Length: 116
Image 1 (cartoon, rainbow, N blue to C red):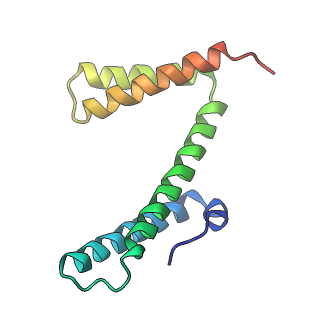
Image 2: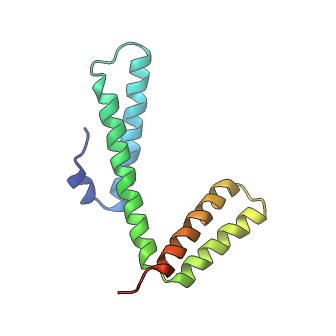
């Protein structure tokens, strides 16, 4: 049930998302079984959590790679959209604030790095 890292890296973004949802559903059923004392393999919970972490790590690595390819003006535009969302007190403002902070740090690092 738990895919290997090599298999995960070979998947597309949509396949990764589907795999993540399947693993989260599997973890939920394992937790229900654990609560009702019918869990046959307790280590399966830990394996599933680790598989979820692997998928999320690969998704984040791909996201960062896409950000690295964006020019600074597009990154700045994203930051401005997120800050506008925070200022207008829209739903998800806390998440938008955190994303804007991360993008600002990323942009600062990108601007400080020597171009090769």
